[in-house]
Length: 226
Image (tube, rainbow, N blue to C red; front, side, top):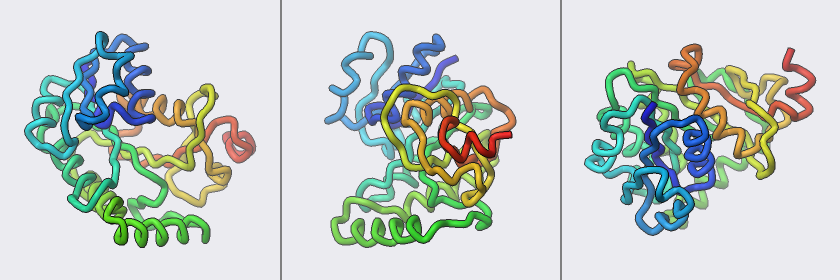
């Protein structure tokens, strides 16, 4: 399998690169030019294309011939970075390619999610800080996911809980809606978030789904996984 990782130099991206290489996949990585050095450990094992992930020509080149595309939707700046990245992937990926996108729990597909007061406050603060600093654009990440949800491609949007570092605990568990008891612990190892993303490439039951995940060893997962 040939896989493109869009946002390969970030923490989540590097884990996805490693998981793909462990599976014997051919990997093409896209990352900002100033972050190429973060991929030095993989330089001889993958193809690295430097540039902005919302650069349409760069994405067109990167996804050419790929069976799957793993995309980290990052709401950087105020230049439609997330939506531009998502749209480029949707437009240029191979017709039957599996398209896996990452985002946070604040994304909802059907408005059936139930959010805690704390998470609602965090989103409001994030939007406020983003507007003041012009460094974040959470609403653009929402726009990106809305475009994905309307697409007829083989997409999956993986909605991650809070993240922590640490050794892998195994594949996260998931549910359709935020607020479901199994997700209550709100914590996933970042390495396992990446594991779920890569595994989704071969999971047909996740096509056009927006799974919300949580670590499989968290108290809520252990209590409700049955």
